[in-house]
Length: 251
Ligand code: HPA
Image (cartoon, rainbow, N blue to C red; front, top):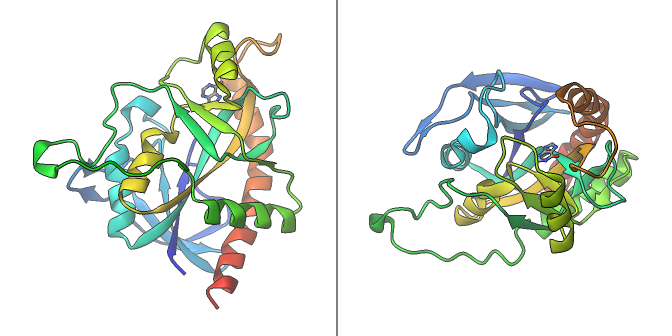
């Protein structure tokens, strides 16, 4: 069984329940990671944890060094990554508070370094990205949610917007027409870089607001932070079961 990594998104600069054994800053050939790489035990199971936005949430989605983060996990021996991500809900079945394991994404970002094959010297590489998320890891998360009795929206398409501003109502209507069920800012290029490095990668998304224009209420950071707090317990329970079940699978 592969070494597991968890990338923490908004609200998860630390992982609830993680017993930290080691925390060290990492400099890769692509630069520094967003935060120190943490090794620890979750429910007794070893894993690596990295805070995507930095320990003090200082990095906006478009400023994250996604290549350094993914390379650091590879260098640490990780081969599976569960990426936590706060998102807006677009599909009517994804109100705030919903946990989701999307199975598709659409990339609306621009100006981010999208590939490890960025320079002529790196050569050309076209990875298969038909299924951007690992079906095996997704099923393991879905199974863990069932055991943890955590309701989960299985599947769905994550639309990745550039940010850092939130979307206009018209942009959300367009994303809905495109088939997006969720909107967030960090799944790309993270998922594609993970694929280029042959990592199993899945997103555990949690809905913290309705997409712009889908509710009468203004989207405020206070409301988003309150909703993150509401999701934290369920995410912690699910991940604790997930870590335990993976250990059981590896015998
Ligand atoms: N849009 C984009 N990213 C987000 C949102 C949103 O509404 N909520 C949380 N992350």
